[in-house]
Image 1 (cartoon, one colour):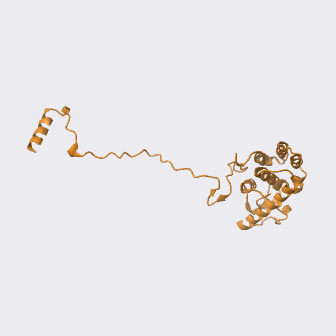
Image 2 (spheres, rainbow, N blue to C red; image 1 turned 180 degrees about the vertical axis):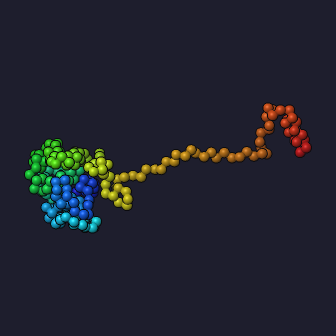
Image 3 (cartoon, rainbow, N blue to C red; image 1 turned 60 degrees about the horizontal axis):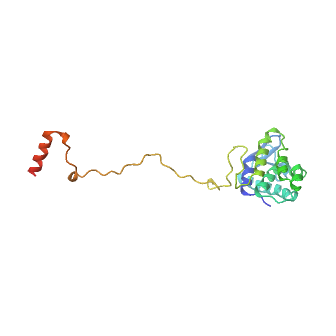
Length: 214
């Protein structure tokens, strides 16, 4: 089973992407999208810098590297959103820890709800708790109901960005706030109504003489 595009987008949002090596929340040198030396994909040292293309390649390899152990450890059927949440967890805690986890043990016993609760047990350090909550929600909620949330930005993950807009997003119609312009035609002098009586005697006399002269 492979991680879905939505799952990869959520994982990218949670891990963040950096092209220069940095220390993560527990002091481990990291680069690209959560790639450390322990992954075996790159030797991450202080000062290491990579290109965006190299980062994309590392991320793709990282996703495949952690999706495999999830597929191998879990013996029960999984929906996309469940599998993606587990890969996100495995990506963070490592394949050996995932394989021995209460999450896997409960899943293989058919206890899906208990497995979701077990995701929340991985709550050290405390800065990781929002991510665990996001993975818990992702595991429990089909993508047709709600897309997973970003941990860093907090906004919904709509999908993989393509052409400046995320797939699954829709453009909203532009609604004008200007009032409608009236299309009233100017009056034709030849068909204009006669002057009202309120204009007075002299005005009515002038109008009568003008018609007589014509």
